[in-house]
Image (tube, rainbow, N blue to C red; front, side, top):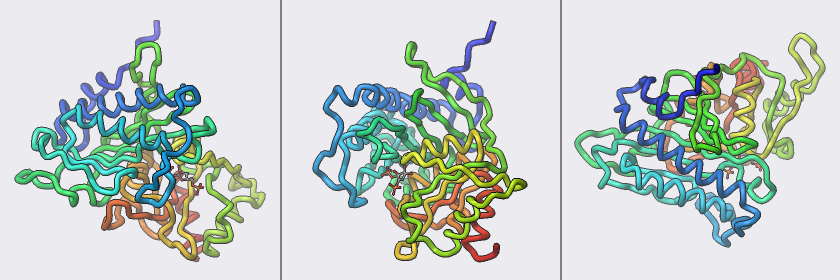
Length: 334
Ligand code: FBP
């Protein structure tokens, strides 16, 4: 008889985080992330029936039209973290200012950054979506959190991960000891361990990039993408293009099969589109913990100095050899 899979909580009871984080409160934090994910997955499964498609009519701090589901996702996570009482500061793609919860401090030591709904262009067309989270602890033990506690380097993360809302809902996470994946069992509502130790292949056969931006790219970036299309049996080329409009879904594919996702800087916008603190940093921690790499094209993502809550950064992420090759082209060394 196949032994039953570990639940998320059982896993966290039996696997110590690499950091000194307190295991009990970390379990509580992941339970609140899991709960928000379940509630969101339920809404997404019935979105077309609930009048929650389309936009709210507002514009967010990124200058983007806010989708109703963006707002619902943000509210769902905020509510879950408030109920958990273990989060003392929260930053979100959908909130211009941080939400400080000093009433939860010091017993609630966690500082969390989220992209509540990744892949917003997919919301109304029943395509994959994701949620991304980055976890740190309050820097100072002697004073309640401030906004500065959120704006820090990726190397200060103690845990990170994402929820992927696809044919099944998955929660993929790292607590600094490798990467694991849980699949939501809709019957019982449990997250069950389905991927015990995710290791990304050192090289892949797939790339994910919005080639509609090709003419805006630097010559090094163009050279790299052109190179992926040239037949070269030894290098396993040409690569296949796979771009879903949802970075979480694209990176989930790479984690399992290898390859590279690129949202580079552009000649007129060298910082690119994606946000450092709640998109690039958490995905970089997950991919690095799985044996991959994450770069701006010229430096490691998690070493990038954090200056602003909604700071943007170019992102090249995936299999080590693919990221190194992209860097060599972008830096004119290839
Ligand atoms: P959101 O968090 O606003 O959805 O932005 C991130 C994202 O949607 C990624 O998931 C996706 O890979 C990329 O932006 C798509 O951007 P573009 O439409 O410019 O290709």
